[in-house]
Amino acid sequence: MKKISFLLNGESRSIHVEPSETLLEVLRDRMGTKSPQCGCASGGCGACTVMLNDKTVRSCLIFAIETDGQEIVTLEGISKNGLSPLQKIFLEHNVFQCGYCAPGMILSATELISRNPHPTLHEIKEAIAGNLCRCTGYTPVIEAILELTKQEV
Amino acid sequence: MAIPHEFAYEKPETLKLALQLLSDHGKNARLLAGGTDLANQMKQGFRVPQILIDIKGIHELEEIRMAGDQLYIGALATFTDLRNSRLIMEKVNILHEAAGMVASNGVRNRATMVGNICSAVACMDSATPLLVHESVVHTLSVNGEKKYRIQDWFVDNRKTAISEDEIVTHVSIPIPEKKYAGAYQKMMRYSGEDLSQANVSVLALSEKQFRVAFGSVGPIPKRSLKIEKLLNTEGVSTETIDKAKKMIETVIAPITDVRATKEYRMHMTKVMFERALLAAMERFKQPRIISY
Ligand code: FES
Ligand code: FES
Image (cartoon, rainbow over all chains, first blue to last red; front, side, top):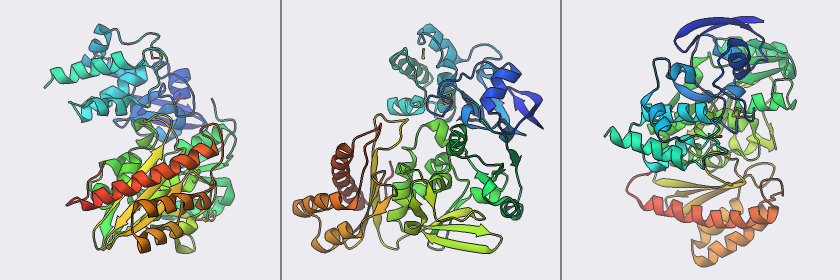
C-alpha cells in the first residue's frame, strides 16, 4: 500500500492504494465518486471517462497510483456549482435514456468545447466517438452540442 | 475488471534511475508510459510484471523537436501531442494523419507512439508511417545507446528487437531534403474507436519515387521494396497499379479473425493501396504539405 494524494474535483484527497488498483476502482468503490461507470474495463467504451490534468482519459486503464500529485475532475466536479450550460442543454433536449454513458459523454463534450468553442459536426462526432451509447443513436447528443456551440457565436 | 496479481510500482525521476531499476529487475519489470495496452494485457494475465517502472516523471522524454535534418519524437509523446504538434503536421503529415485515427480521443490523450511500437500489436497505427519514413528507434541501457532501423525493430506479433535492459528514449525521423508527401489509409468497422483491420502508408518523394508499407496484414508491418521498385522504375499508370495490386498477394499474409476475413483484408489492402498512392501523389502536387 502506498499513500497517494491528488486533487479530486477541487478538493485535496489522500488514500492508500495498492499498485494493482485502477483509478476507476478507487474512485468508485473507495472514494464514493460514482459518476465514472464500468462498461468494458478495457478502454473501449468510454463509460469510465474522467479528466486527468484537463484531458479526458479512461480510468479503467490507469493505475490509481499513477495519479499521485495530479488533478482529477469527474462529472461531480463539473456540476459542483449547478449544472453546466452543456448539461442544461442536454437536459432540455432530453438526450439520454438510461444515462449510463452520460458522465463520459458529458466530459468528452466538455473537453471539446473548452478547446474548440465552435466545433464542426465532424469534430463533435470525433470527440464523442469513443463514448459508446446503447440507447440514443447519438443524434440527440450531437444536435444538442451543435445548438449550444452555435448559440455562443 | 481488476488486475489479478500484485506488483510493485516505482516512478524514477531520471533516466539513470530508471535504467538502474530496469537492470536490477530484468524481465520481471515492465516500463509504463500511457499504459493503455499494458493495463489491458495485465488484466488478461498476458503480462505479469513484478514491478512497473513508470517513466512519466522523466520529462526529457516528452519532447518533439527538430535537430539538423532529424525529427525526434520522445518516448512520452502521446498521440494527442502528435496531433497538436505543428512540427509533426508539417514534417511528417502521414504520421499526423495516422495519429488522428488511433482509437478514441480519450485513449490518444494517454497512449504514446513509442508505446504503440513497443507493444507491437500487429494492428498498430504508427508502424507503417514510420517505415516509409525510414525511422530509427533509439534505446538506452546501462551499457549505452543503441539504434535500431525501424525495419529491424518488429520481430513478431507483440515482439520487438529490444532487450530487457533497454528503454526506448525516442524515435528519429530523417526529413527528406526535397519535397515529399504521405498518405495513410486504415480500414476499420467504424471510425473513432476501432483497431485497424488493415492499413497502408504511401510516401511520395521527388523524382517520382515512392515508398510503400502495409500493416495489420501479417505478424509484423512490412515495407515492400518490390512494389516500390515497380513504381519507381515503370512509373505510376493503370497498368503498374494493377501489377502492384497483384504483387500485394505475395507481399502480405493476412489472417481471418473476429474483425475481418483474410480475403476481405487482401481485397481492401489493394483498394487502400491505390487510394493511398493517389492521395500521396495529389498531396505532393500541393504547394506545401497539408495534413488531415
Ligand atoms: S470501462 Fe473504461 S473504457 Fe469502458
Ligand atoms: S443513454 Fe443509455 S447508454 Fe447512452
